[in-house]
Image (cartoon, rainbow, N blue to C red; front, side):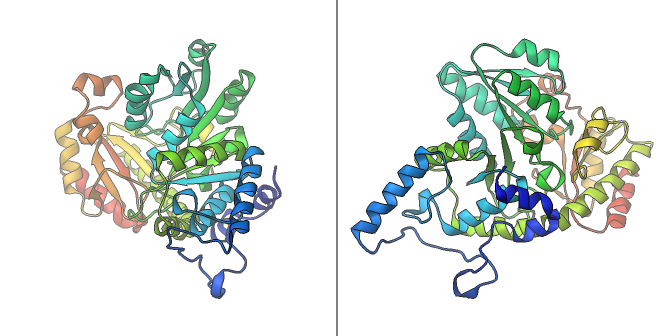
Length: 409
């Protein structure tokens, strides 16, 4: 455990979210991290350039992050570096890599860790485009995947092959909000020499830090709760420096790097993440309890409810249960009526922002355009399912809005 990680464990998360990773003295005495908007970084002479190359090679050979200065914007930027230091600190990792999107973070990790002929195990129901990347693109290199139910360790055991390298899981999952037993899963992977990757986008490092339970890498779509204002697209991978060094080099070649202005907005969003997550956690819990008791609601998926299959796991692992509640009414027609009747949330497919968003799951792009009704049923996406990403609006207003919308069916 690094000195930075120990220091962060001693402080309240609200403090680290604001201050971790930032320079004590910024240029010009700026309180906020500046946006270093440049493509190139110049050297005073060729000797300085030579020293840069030598130091970069030495650190890379040792698997250490990262060299103290920059050469070209695609290979790093001071604003990006500050965002990465903050991400590593609040997640409790040695290093972090900020990418151009959540999917870029996923592809950077998997392409770095897997080679032709390798195998991975995917736990639970992954994000649709992750499944597409694995099944349509990794398969071109003979990389295959088996999908196993969440927390089914017998199925995991059966799925592991001699060429298995990675176990990939999301927690909570989308849209059912299933929660994986991290400690048990990490121990399973360690015993078999497998790399355990956790996409913790829905949880955020405020509610859950998978590295503390033994995960090797954590992935986030920083587009969601981390940035938190529905105005940024970014991703992140956090974990051991030896992994991040290699992924950074791969990303430099593949081009999924991030602009300094976006890195700045990620920093800005992170500073209020703790405050926002407190509101998300509190309001979502109230909404889930309200829906659970409502006569017109068929089912509610939220790990904070005792009725949820992973409630005890979530209660043991998580500070709060997140800002998304999924629920069901009887039919697609009823789901459309409820969503159309809501006045506060906008109908949109993302999540994790200050504005509430809502969608009929069966009409999302992944389900509506790419799946048949039979495939939706196979993935347990009922026609009447609704996903509600709850923002930071007044909880009473949200509950009143839900009440009047449900009265329409």
